[in-house]
Image (cartoon, rainbow, N blue to C red):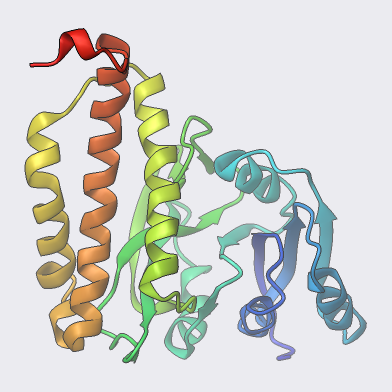
Length: 273
């Protein structure tokens, strides 16, 4: 650990993350505080955290029964005590460029309420994408009390600044290491698309026919060309296609939820056409 601490509370929500959490923690050695909120791990996550605590890492380990993605992260954010808070997942870690940039970010003018950080994925058969290739850029580093989570979001929850200016960090990235084979990744996309579809259905959103037709293609093109995954060969192509599958599944599930209300499924031979 470095002795040069910054006024940042990093916060992590986790459950059964012993295979990923250590590298995440090690990348946070410049943070004055690390808040880890566990929702009931049955592996050695707690033991791993205790080892870091014994070694002098400034970790507060808190148990909180699962509240949902947004509410769980809001709970973790509320525990942070430092002037700045950094949202990071257990399968992410800060690259060296961002670690070097952090002192400048926390010295920003008071009007700056937060910083967006790019995230680079680890692709099976390739490794981490190059610095100019990224998945997305999200608000992750925020001033205390000036951002919160939208608790209506069931998945892909994100921080929202209450006011002021939000800027791009400009360089540095979160490295996302969870190399799931396509069999497992599709199951994850299926789960997330269900959560998103249920959220939109509950909010009264009707079938979005144009989006179901065109959004998967737009999603793919955005990832593949705008975010430059084409630099990563077939691993980049697979990553972009997987994103388009999530987009299609979300829209198809919204349609089918409404269709089941309008036309309940009945095995009616008299209705055979």
